[in-house]
Image (cartoon, rainbow, N blue to C red):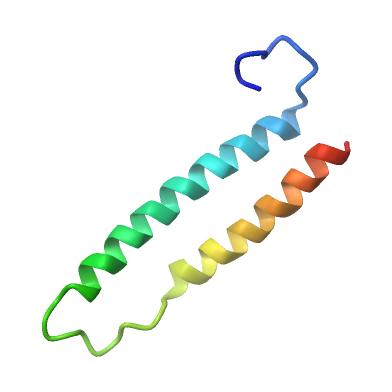
Length: 73
């Protein structure tokens, strides 16, 4: 899609691609942070998923919706 920017790519396609890239970076950074927390000894008292894990899940759902819209429009 990015190689053929002169074609009929709609702005929604670029929004979906940008959100996918942002989500991938965010998931990586959250994973690195959680891995660092879980590597501590003794384990911290609070190791359950925090807000950022839930926000990542919500962002994935939003990406699915945007991608579906981009494919149908």
